[in-house]
Length: 365
Ligand SMILES: Cc1cc2nc3c(=O)[nH]c(=O)nc-3n(C[C@H](O)[C@H](O)[C@H](O)COP(=O)(O)OP(=O)(O)OC[C@H]3O[C@@H](n4cnc5c(N)ncnc54)[C@H](O)[C@@H]3O)c2cc1C
Image (cartoon, rainbow, N blue to C red; front, side, top):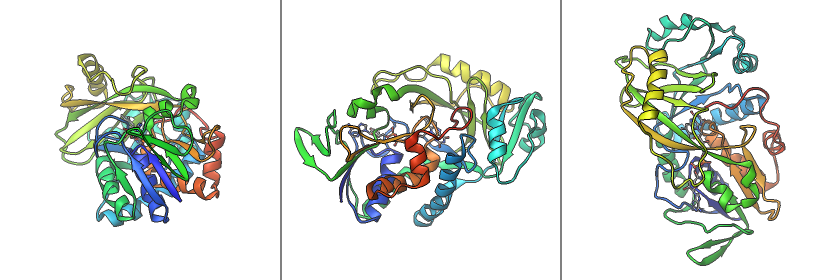
């Protein structure tokens, strides 16, 4: 089939690669240049969790993705994920921690916050009153390395990738408008992240766009620290980053964005907020961020994904692996698109389409 993929963030790249491998004639379109830093997929690292506490469907997707990440690593010729282990933490009784424990294949009881200090040699600290669950099946994805890999691999499998090529909005059926010309396809998959609601206005009320900031801190610790997620009001998460840095992000903090092309750059207020978290959680680090960056979350009301055919045009699929936790599933995103194209949906596809994904708590990085 002749298929267009609109948007070459991590979702669009994975879809192009998978569908090209399956023998479809794929054209991928991206409004910016390769490896740009404007959407949701840029940045050095993302957290990988094979037992995400978001619910059973996500655990199944993570396990499917885990096997496929190994295939990608074989083609890449090296690791794309470093298995650092993770610390899932929160105030006592956190439903997220309970879900992580319940979904785990190796049941373990949470420990008290300060019990982690020997493990992290004091570089990561947590209050005694918090519950902390260790997850060995947690790690850090080389996000930019993965995008670079797919930019090479998808064309090797036959996909045509067109950068600096903006698809005109709105999309009305499997016919795309590019620079005033039209191109017709058998199917169109819209993986346009924060821009999806402009391209497919019928989904406007279902997707909110949020500004998010991440900050990097210098560490003197030569050994790799674990990744972490704190199920508190700010939703602080952290992970090792290249060049001896540790990165923090705030899953739940940042205002709404009207126009994804204009997002406020990080400022002193952001640095102060991150500094306060660093003083508590990273006591042996300099609390002044080495650098900060902005990123976009596209969020659904239930913090799940929104993967749904257009009501108006059945050969047009909205594909938004969003809500701040989609990167870990990267290799399986292409498979989900293929299931739609072939009309052979897996139970995971059907659960996502029903919106039945999240069982407890909100989605975490
Ligand atoms: C700060 C931050 C931290 C995160 N941490 C984690 C984590 O630790 N673990 C995890 O699993 N996930 C994490 N996520 C979530 C994950 O990164 C996203 O779910 C994922 O990147 C979404 O990818 P996407 O391809 O859907 O969107 P995007 O990367 O935004 O891609 C959409 C693309 O479409 C293009 N586009 C839009 N309109 C058009 C048009 N008209 N024509 C052509 N191209 C167009 C855009 O330019 C863009 O490149 C995080 C996200 C952020 C922002």
